[in-house]
Length: 139
Image (cartoon, rainbow, N blue to C red; front, side, top):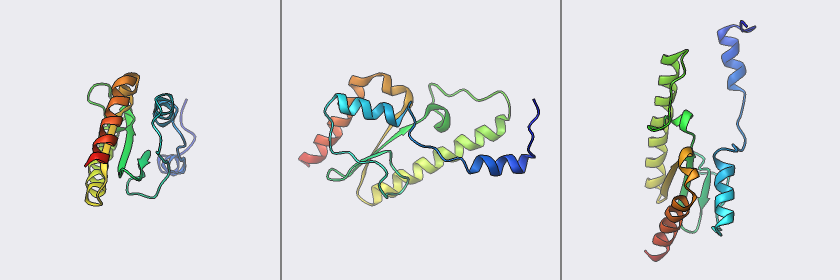
């Protein structure tokens, strides 16, 4: 079926769509942290890059990157149509991710990034979070 909007109008319409909690990423990590007694995290805090979670006392910013939107080297498959657009989109997202990590580190934050696909290995995710939180408290 043909699109009823012109490309510029479609772009405008799509740009107005804002995401909310994503069941495959942030909400899934909330469940993992709650099941494993990881406390002290906050969401929607005013930091560069809007981390998905932050541990203020430990100064840890945590991101969960969707495999499609951030170009997971293991999972990402480029769509069959508009390949150039998607290649650029993912490239821009990855550049922004690197910039945000630099900004947060300059502000004294430790940055942790998880791929969406890694959340299926709950024990590894929990071990990494706890290792980072406890290492930060000891130092």
